[in-house]
Each structure stands twice: as structure tokens, then as C-alpha cells.
Amino acid sequence: MGDVARAVNIAELRRMARARLPRVVFDYLDGGAEDERTLRDNVAAFRRWQFRPRHGEATGAFDLSTKVMGQNLAWPMLAAPIGYSGLMHRDGERGMGRAAAKADIAYVMSTISGTAMEEVAATGVPLFLQIYLLGGREAGEATLARAREAGVKGLFLTVDTAVAGLRERDLRNGLVQLMGRDIAAKLPYLPDVLAHPRWVFDYLMGARMTHLPNVIVPGKGPLPLTDVASALARSLVTWEDLAWIRAQWKGPIAVKGVLTGEDARRAVDGGADAVVVSNHGGRQLDGVAASLDALPEIVQAVGRDCDVLMDGGIRRGGDIAKALALGACAVLVGRAGAYGLAAGGEAGARRAFAILGADLMRTLALLGRPSAALLDGSCLQRRD
Ligand SMILES: Cc1cc2nc3c(=O)[nH]c(=O)nc-3n(C[C@H](O)[C@H](O)[C@H](O)COP(=O)(O)O)c2cc1C
Image 1 (cartoon, rainbow, N blue to C red):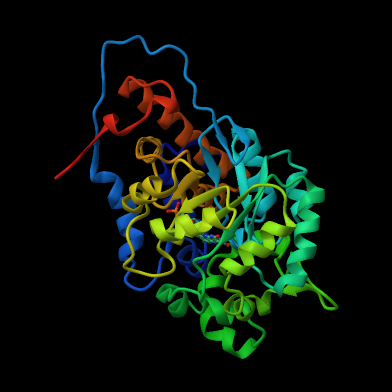
Image 2 (cartoon, rainbow, N blue to C red):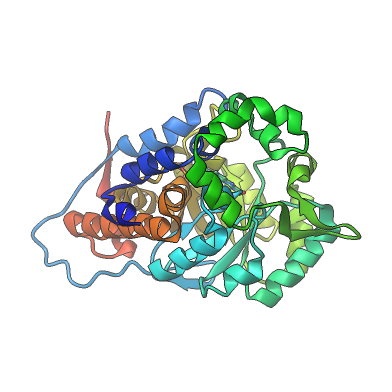
């Protein structure tokens, strides 16, 4: 893992991930919906803001701690839910949990995970669980009971996945065929996979995701991976589901995937403790606003009533500083951590979080605001 330890930025971890993974897996991780306009704009939006540093003041002790959904966090970042993390590296969700624990950040684990939540909780990471109601409410009820038992700190209810976005790279690479049951349908897509024997070996040595251990369908057992795509297509999470989950779950709930003040207000009125301003990393509806651009409207609508988090496009610690300055209390880090995991397992994810953390500290020192609480609109100016 010497390579990942030497990576100086997230772009280098991304290059390492691209070299290690079959194209079908790398594109699943890296790609977005349709023309990928929102995917690119998520990153570009951060470049539309410039810093306004204040100099000459002794900066004193750093304080990056924050409180998110009642939980004290050392850093204003959480590892975002990434479905199929076991494809990135055999360390999978356990590796991501250990990396996050060592980096002293929290982890929001995806429903679409190949590892039981209890095993990830055992890494000691402050663990949140992302919810898709795959398998319906009965399966959901059992998941919530287990989450309570496992000490999960809160739920992230993803509401932007009425259907899967059109990810053209995945169509081209045969992702669905490769994950399906039909052997003949896989054949045209196998050469790409077999051209990466080290990844194949690693995958076979790992947990080899076959089922989702956190979605137990009553009378049937864990949901088979081959049924996930069709289950996802039937599992839109509605405002009624929020009310239902609110009645079941006493701990904090975040609604993830909010892009308008109206939906943010609806989430808060429905009992959410937090909203995540997110377009799913540009993977769902192409052509929506970059998350950073949508953030001010939502802060204005509900910023006094709940925690506002954001995700999308975070590739540098300076990006985190800009999101906080525009009113987010913390960010979710998606691809940045996943590129690390894909490049070198737990060590790679850890390297990604270390890079972002060091970046953020340096940015705050250079800005003359050593504490996350000191970041506000006066730190930024719009670039024309
Ligand atoms: C490969 C991949 C898988 C994802 N899987 C999920 C998921 O299972 N549930 C979910 O709520 N969001 C999922 N997301 C969205 C992320 O949680 C997050 O919103 C997004 O990655 C943030 O953008 P960024 O990657 O630019 O940081 C996924 C994103 C990627 C890249």
C-alpha cells in the first residue's frame, strides 16, 4: 500500500483507482447520469467562489469539531454512503468503517452493502445508516430494530431515487448484465474484467457480495444482489415513509437528496432533524443545480430549524471550508473516500480522509479563521 501513502491529493488516488479497477467498476464509481453536466458542475461550483483571507492575527488553537444530529464530531465531514463498496476493494464497508474510525470521522453506511451493520459498528466508528426501503416496510422494520441494537447513531433517508438515473457508462460496460444471473449475457463484457486479474483475485478473496445482509425480506432471507435493481425501482421513499419511520425510530433522522427550500421545509415539518443538500453526486437527474449552488436556498429555508449538511464535488479540504462558509454544518464525502478505498482498501480511504483533513486545517490557517465556527459568508467572494 506504499503507493496510496504517497498520494498527495484526491486526483492521484482517483488515477490509482482507475489503474486498479476494471472499467465497469471504475465507471460505476466515477460516472454520473446522462451528459454528466451536474456531476461536473458539482466540482466546478466550488471554483466559482474565492476566499477572502484575513492576515496578521495569531490563529491560536484549531477547532474543527461540530455537532451533527446530536453527535459530537471531531471533523465536519462524514464518509458518504456508497453502494457496492465491496466491488471497490475486498476491505469493503469494514475497511471504510475502520478508515473513518482512525480518521476520527463518522460513516454513513449504504443499504446497498455487502457487510452486516453490526460488523461495521464493531470497528468503533460513529455509524449512521442510509435507508432505501428495499424489501418494503416489513423488511425496513427489522432493519431499524437491528440498527437500534447495533448502536447506529441516526438514519439518512435517501429521497432522490424514484428510479435509477440513466448512467450511460454503466449501460455501455454491461454493469447490469455482469451483476445478473444470465451467464450468456455477461460474455461480451467479461474481457474488461478478466484484463484485471489482480482485481478479480482480490474480489474472489473478499466477501463477494451476493446478498444484502441488512435487508432481510420476511420469509425469504437477505435480498439477493441480482434482485437489487428491480427492488430499487419499486422502493421510492415518500413523505409518508418519513412519517412512518419517524414513528418507529426515536433517534435522529436526516433526509438526503434535498435541492429546494420547499422540500427542506417538508422534511423538517415531517420530523427530520437534518437535511442533506445533495444531487446524489450527479448520478440521478442530470441538469439539476450543483449542490453548493442549492445550499444557500436551503440554509435560508430551514437553517435555524435543523442541521444542514451537503455533499457533491468535495475533492479538496478548501471545498469543505467553502461549504461551511455558505452555511453547511458538515459535508458528506463520497467519491473522494471511495477513490481511496478503490486505490488501496482501508489504507487508501484513510489516506483520502487524511489529505482532506490536512487540507482543511491549512486552508483555515491561511484564511485566518482557525475554527469551523468562524467560517461565514465574509470568508468568500463570488468569482465573475
Ligand atoms: C458509487 C456511488 C454509489 C453511491 N451509492 C449511494 C447509496 O447507496 N445511497 C445513497 O444515498 N447515496 C449513494 N451515493 C451518493 C453519495 O452518497 C453522495 O451523495 C455523492 O457521492 C456525493 O458526491 P461526491 O461523490 O462528489 O462526493 C453513491 C455515490 C457513488 C459515487
